[in-house]
Image (cartoon, rainbow, N blue to C red; front, top):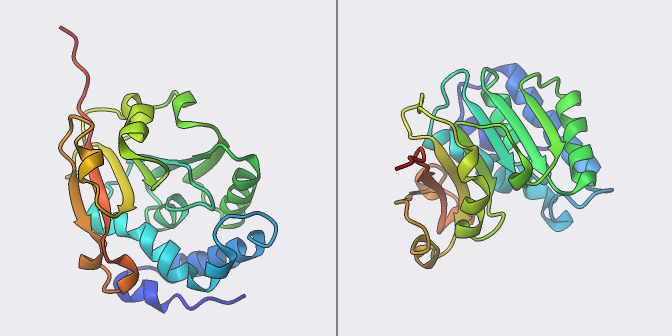
Length: 216
């Protein structure tokens, strides 16, 4: 199956030919794996460039990762948002995790096939990861308060990017009730401000800064 990546190039005109080819090949790999492993809805496969790749890259419109930034993708599923981000940020390091072994097998194959030397995939839960990262990224894995409980200790300091280290969460809807359940002050970045498509109405990149714990 071939995919038209013009929708991505429209918003990321500085992508190299090699990066465009990697995104195209990644789309084909996901379509192939999706016939065997449920990575994304099979009825949605034709919308992969818009609803999955471009959606993932909304994070790249929110913060421009400096070289050397370390990013953990929790509940990566089919490699989203981690692999699209790893393609456009080759000088950053990405670790992609998911608790489902079949999905990690597919993601690992994609990483190897794309020759992404800056990304690795492991079968793991966020609570079991022992490394620390500048940013944790995810696509609506669970309710934010629960998710923050998993990853607070995985954020390292000090911050080296223009944005404070912490969580970058792709989620939609009314999040006010969830925000009331944790102490940090999140910032919502509407995705329609980046990409003018109705699919992104009321969807956000949510940034939650995670402060360094202090002891009294």
